[in-house]
Image 1: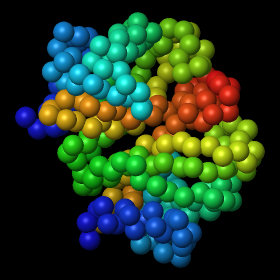
Image 2 (image 1 turned 180 degrees about the vertical axis):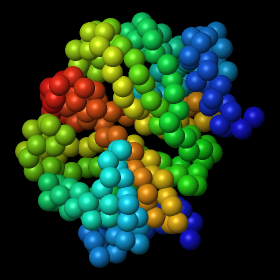
Image 3 (image 1 turned 90 degrees about the vertical axis):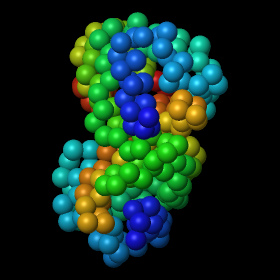
Image 4 (image 1 turned 120 degrees about the horizontal axis):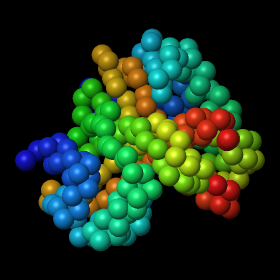
Length: 129
Length: 129
């Protein structure tokens, strides 16, 4: 299977909150932004994301596949419940991008480097920055 | 020339502040984060960046080349002079990443989608968020 197909399968797994299948896409020793999470920590992070953002959904805006790396620009349009990235969203609808790199090993995510466009969210909250 | 070689040439052009050569790498109608800049606006943005951050330098941490797209994770270690991304840096040394996508047309940058890791800078300023 191509890395692009694997990656799209990963996002479909997240959208479905199909945590029992997460090990098909995420490695046992996964790291994110320099921090060791492991598969169980990675799953706990995603579960917490969906608790904080009940209507979380992943939309690919741009994709660059250059094995072993995948880079994606994801677009979110959602209503985080409380404080998100240190910002008091409290259920307001916001839209923002995440530019994220993944390194795959043997078809699974080994490492993630994510940056979320916090500045864009601040602008939607009324120039809080 | 490969897209990777062109991209590395672009960063070398920035590091050298060789603005007379910028048109070799940036298209006449360049856009950034949804905004039309054109070549002259793009150059003005870069010149302003170097005025605000005199020791600005571009280091590639990750690169994914998937024509017509290039995605890069860039690492900065620098001392912005005053307010940067709405944060009072005032000459402190900070390190942060930028995850950025480029779409090339005929060997030149046509569009850029950049996200800078503001949260990481805030953490270095003492948890201002």
